[in-house]
Structure formats: structure tokens, C-alpha cells
Length: 433
Image (cartoon, rainbow, N blue to C red; front, side, top):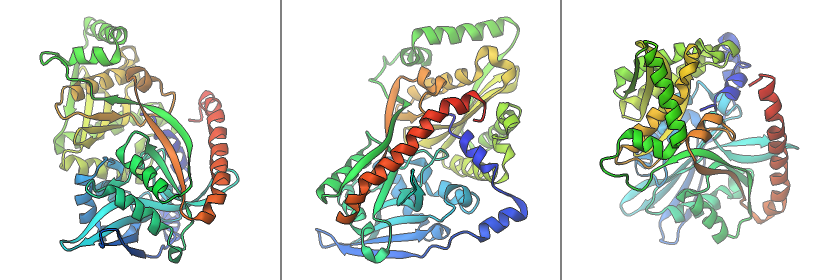
């Protein structure tokens, strides 16, 4: 949904071959850090900052937590993170990244209660040093994984222990790309208030989403549901384009690949189609970048094995004309990447496959929400889906001393965000994105 192009352009500056090896050898080696404290219930809480290279040490516990997490975040699923390291380490976290795990030890054993990847960054104008959740245009959702049974206490313990001076960490955390309406974000803010920690929001915006409606009539068809969501005028125009195409002798067929073999075949067709498009000509297609295409193949394959990846395709005369890669499960979905054959622009293939996916999701009894991941102002996503999710970067000072510096850091990040927003129309107009 338009989140890849900036990342691909950045990736094109990264070297493969011998240069890439040298880049990886220069990777920062982070220490394994620990802090602990006894909670209100006399249980022992332990915070571990595990270097990304050692993710396998905590993989099974993260998988258990992801299954029961209060809010879903497919980008923090162990399979996605495992695929990202070491392939994208220089792109996502060139100065290193910790897999932050919060454990609680009770009479029944030791269990992970919260998980979130963090890195040390320098950002803003002028540059400000801080901790930041691992989220970016490539993975634009920073919601931590939390155990719902003790999420409130876990949030307080996370903020307390990250501020432990023995860890030597920057005393300000940027919880970037947070869903303002999510339960996890509400508990994080409540924990900061309870601990009397200063906080502030930066770069808030709304992005297009599809949310579950009140139950439709049990006899409602997918077309009727699409019409209710996307509007009669747009739905009618879309149907007119399909009819005109079929009247000219073309055959249109929609398909959703769900099992592993079908998904893998659909993904390779997607890559080929994207390479032939304007993204291929600009060098921002997946196929143009070995490490990113390898990463994408692995997460698509691994998630498809567990039913967490599906690919919607529109075929014209038996050949793919548009494809939409979707990640997610449990009623939550993210349209991760879309491509279409420009030769069939008259039928608006990208919009057609998005509307088809919309109808598919709305007919599923367990459907809850689909997050477009789209940047503000994204034409297709915002025109098709009228629902919005509030996204914000939320900063919190972990110590009283850091509270005095927080306004300066918020202002520096706001200034940088404003500059990027003012330049975005120019960049799009001259074709650099």
C-alpha cells in the first residue's frame, strides 16, 4: 500500500557482494543487558535486552506471547523478525537492535509478559539521542506484544526497568507508530501517568483502515457489503469497468491463494509483475534488491505455513493483472504490498483486487480490522476505506532529569517531521519517490 518505495530507494544505496559483507562485519555488537525488580504481588520481574542476533534464545516464548497478545502486530511475530536478521540489519537497525523481553516469575514458573524490539537512534533536527521502537516505513506498526492478564503491571515495570541507571540507556523512549485506539497504547500512557513520567506525542496522523461493521443481513452478498463500505458510486464505476472489459472479449477472474504452494506461486508471479511495472523501472521493485527479496520470500513462506499470509489476485485472460499480499491472522490483516499490470490500467486492476479483498474479509465471521499501512494522502486506500486509525509517535521520559529535556526532543522531531511533510509533494511531483 505504498510504504515500500522510500525504503527501496534507501536500500538501493546499500551494497551487496563484498561491500555488503564489509557492512555486516562493521555491525555494532550490543551487550546482553538485564535488570530486575519485585512487583506489587511479590513476583520477580526481569527485563532482558537480548541482541537481535540471539533472537533464537527467546523465540518459543515470543511465539507463545504473540498467540495471546492483547493487540496483534504481525511485524513483531518471531517469523518476521527472524527473517529480517541478518538480511536487513543494516537497513532496519544499522547501529544494532535489542529484543526487549519482560519476564515474570511466579510459583507456576517464568513467563514472558511483554515483548518489543528497541534500538538506540539519533533523530530529529538537531539530532537527539534516544531509545526507539523498531518501526519504520517498511514495518509501520510499533505495538508491543503484551500478555492481557497482567498488561497494566507489565507496562509499569517496562518503564521502571528501562530507566534503571545500571543499564546505561538513553532516558527517553520513542514508542513510534503506535495505534492511538489500541488497548496496549492506552495502558502504556496510563503507566506513565501512574509513575508520574513526562510524555508527549509527535507526528500524529490518521491512516485508512477497514473496521468490522455491525452484522450485515445474513443474506447479504459480498458485493452488497463492498457497496456499503466503498460507496455506491465507486462500486458502480468499478463494475462498469469490468463489464466493458468482458464485453471486449476478456475474461476476468479473482482468486485468493491461502495454502503454501499456491501462495509461493502467487508470490513469484507478483515479483515478476512488479518488476515489469514503474517500480521496476525506478529500481524499487522487490526483485531489484537481493536481500529484501530474500527476506520477503522467507516471511511469505513461513507465514503461509501457519495461515498468516494470503495473496489476492486478479487474472485477465489467465494471466495475473494485479496482486495483493496480505499478512495477518485472527481477524486482523495488513495489505503489505500491491502490484498491477499497467497494460490493463483501463480496468483499474489495483482497485479491483482491493475491493475483492474487502468483500472477502467482510464475509468472514471473525473479521475485526484491516490496517492499510498507507501513508497520509494515499489515493486508493483513503478513497476505498473511510475508516481511520490514529497513528502517533509517543515519547516518554524515564527519569525526572530527562523530563526537562523532553520538550526539546519533541520539538526536534516535530521540526524534522514538518520538513518531510513540506517536501513530500515536491518529491512526488519530480518523480523521486
